[in-house]
Image (cartoon, rainbow, N blue to C red):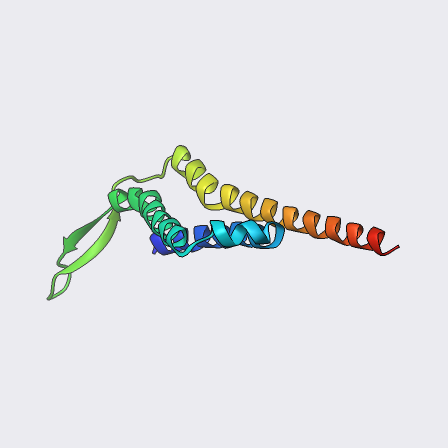
Length: 125
């Protein structure tokens, strides 16, 4: 589940970056953003999301219980309390970095569009 969340977040970041290139550099974008590079970036995002979510595979384990007539398995944490460093690193990689990149790309798009409108209005006068 966490792998899907991480990959979804970083695919959104990738779409924002691609949109920036498509709006601000449309001619160079066609030669730079190829199918091969898109597949490579997608594979990198999947591997990155797996690497970021790997520590959760270590934190939890299953334990077999027999309180009823049939055996059951419960998911238990290896640590009773998560560390502060894990919380900070998760916050940085899941919220701060993606939000900063998406915000910066959209701000650059707005800046470029406003420059174009100013240029176009000055040219028509």
